Image (cartoon, rainbow, N blue to C red; front, side, top):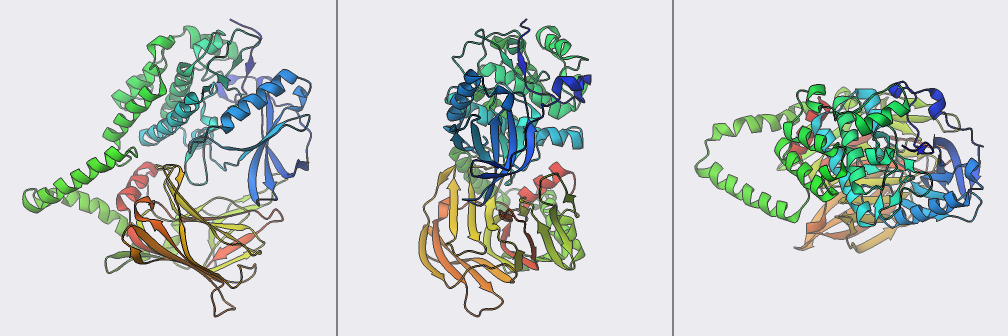
Length: 573
């Protein structure tokens, strides 16, 4: 076994490891890195330091990863850092944290990456102990898709662990930190072998042998074991004993640790943890196929987004319609209807029927509304602006300097979305996330609006990760959103002029004007409109901002099945 190996930092509290093993070195504070204004340091490891920063040109929060100052004169590490960064930057996948730019003009090169507010699944474990199988399957599928795409680009990650799986603002699960990544052809016997985190690294990493995608499969198996049981596969008193356990100790029986675990899922995880790479699943594609089959059986509503699946669903719906009308007894459908009725009952006074349309009205002086939003929570991290998470005060929804999404219930179809009394102090950018679903990360619909400056709205619709063409029929601007003034925003579906395209109108009105500040009519191909949970977020304005909303009305068709599934995962409405 090699003695000159580098480790990714582990938590000092886990496995009784000493604090000296993982104590980060002190790094100098920066006001700026390039054009980016540094807000705070959010992470540090043996090879790099990560900062949260503000991008003044695009008015957005980003993450910056910079080579560690102590490695300034190690040109080989600098070159490796840049080479791997360029390789990852070429991978565009909804389950991989994206690199926006690479800067190598300074002594310490750095990457500009998308900022992921989290939580990470390490934080989820710390808070919840362990996760339900439906949620772990979702993590497993997202991670495997990310690893498969990286593998297709010739990259293996080599540091899969819960802290490197992070939830983004849309609820998507993303794999991050390819800082220990290497190419498939890389010879691990040359120089120091860089090993992953001791709780999750594969036997071949520990022994300094060559690694391929099967090494990532082992680390993912160890991560899934931890998420399900609340403990990593091996726990020892020292790093060296922990490494030796990965090589020599028997594979732990997950059924003993969690007797209620699904047998097929348990068998898959056990196979991923085989000591010998040739006895594990041989590629990510095979793992993904098995995960999707298990998910279909355990949680059929979380179906893989494939066209064949859509066709099969249509056939099944047709058959059920015929059976329900002529053969199937109505009382067999009663339990299903009762489950869906729970959604209506739980929404209580918020939900009304408007013909064949569901109408949700969020009046923030309604006590029932409060359970949809978290209580007041203020963050006072050094170097950061104070953050107030969404909360209800004096009949208004309020929050400040918090880039998280204010999310509303899942909709199968959105016909009208109205925000009344939207007012900001400061000039952040407003993002209306018209449709987003973590199960379909490549499908989304977003509208961007600027506050305090004159700019056209931006519309982005993605289908399976590819942009969908938007046709703008009309755009009239008589002004723009200003701070300190109440505004009403309305997005509504219009009568179509083309059977293959849906028409919408976005209108912004201020309290001081009879004419709309903005009116835009546009069309989207009908077969490309995503469904999901509407949400809104504000971001930018480094000087700080706060906002409030008086009322929200959403009309369309609630996705009751999707809402019920989320409630089951959360354990409560």
